[in-house]
Image (cartoon, rainbow, N blue to C red):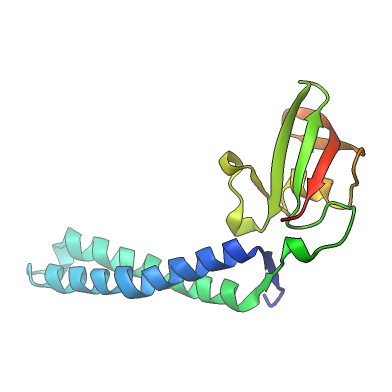
Length: 158
């Protein structure tokens, strides 16, 4: 996989921070845990050793994954975008026609998505449906519970 991964500056920093933490804190800790568990005797029946080795495998896998994502990152700065369309990085306020309520989402990369914080992935069904729409557009989105109809009431780039 050599395609680029779109993300915000914040998302890029978060990946870098996680990578640093894994390399500087978690990796040395698990190496110490393995050494300590080895000191407890027979490794064939040593649950602490097995758990530490499993944790080490997870950490090393995550380090590899983060290095790959950082190498392929395409940092997109929403403030530099000049458009009247919804694109990656936009803060979009939608009016839900059914519930007559408003909801605001920020369209971000997959690793940044967090619905509780109002961040949706550009590759999610809602994110994909919103891309390219303009202010006052009606957007029909097929979701597991049926069809949602939204009106785009605001688009901002920060």
